[in-house]
Amino acid sequence: ILRMLIEAAYDTHHIQLSIEDNFKARVNAVKALDAEERRAKKAAKEELTAMESAARERLATEGREAFMATKREEVIEDIKASKEYSVEFIESLNDEDIIDLDDDTKAEYEALPTAESFNKAEVNAVVKKIQEETAFGVESLTVLTLEEIEKRDEEYLKSLQDDLVSFGDIDTMNRGHSRAERETFYKVDRLRREITNFTEQMQSLSEERKQAIEDLKDAIDDGTVKTLRAAMRTAKLARLSGDDDQTNGVWALDLIRDAALELKNAESRKRVTEAQKDLIAKRDKCFIRTEPLGRDRYQSCFIHFDYDQSSRVWTERDFILRSKGNVDSENGVLMKLPGEACIGAEDK
Image 1 (tube, rainbow, N blue to C red):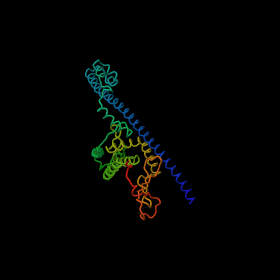
Image 2 (spheres, helix red, strand yellow; image 1 turned 90 degrees about the vertical axis):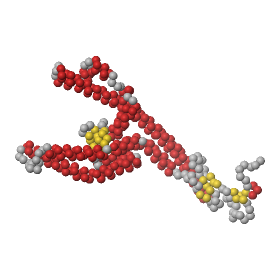
Image 3 (cartoon, rainbow, N blue to C red; image 1 turned 30 degrees about the horizontal axis):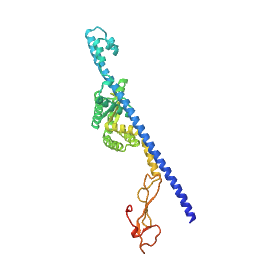
Image 4 (tube, rainbow, N blue to C red; image 1 turned 60 degrees about the horizontal axis):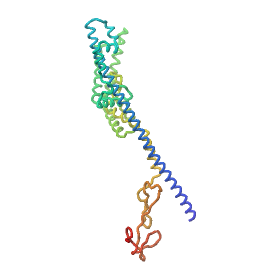
């Protein structure tokens, strides 16, 4: 019995220390999570401020470039009509030369909108575009629907077929003996193989794209970095994004754009997510029940209340009115005489 009491006292002490340590760890984890959330909000705010500034500068720059392009065309037409200067001289004129040609041009240039003069709606539209480009890591992004991508593929196939037709009667063409004839034969052969390969890819691409789109939707709902990256890789293999030769940027399906934005947001909140996982791990490490722990043979209910810093266990016991023969044992129960039983404070 003495040994059992000593072991029970030892276990109780160490369990108490474990609960207290875990409670402190939980408090620290909550504080760390709050700090990471504040840091993430601050970083997001600073990033948004920088993007708004960049958007205003882009709007002002685009306005100046459009003005200079229009004015350059007008000046070139006027100079060509007067035949006062040569074509080489006209093409050598820079923006400053055109601005200084006359006072009216200079006044128009100085009256162009500045970065601070654009309204919130215009700035927000450009900020959205900058966010999309930043998520892809490119300077230019063209967002397309699935129908537009399929039309793009059809136009590309047609361009290959037109190139093949431009060589004339290809059915009777042979390798030839001259260098020019051999080069033409190889070009035609390469075009034929490219058309065949592209046509075969298009036949199997429909199902692959459907599956890739479903993966993108599931990844966006999941919101984790790993699933988003995997879904975007699958979508790229399904030719739902690619290089844009016209803009020297990238074209992509609108759903890939959404996944890229979600991925950037998940990566920026990675430290917050890790802090949340750390808090959950500390909570699960020493789980404290808040429902009744159970009852003893006297039907006494034992309860632990969460956030009880002393980590005490409370017991709920019913009073039993004392009478002869109504209980087998009087140990461990609270007994009252019928005359002593009362509810609430004593009536004075």
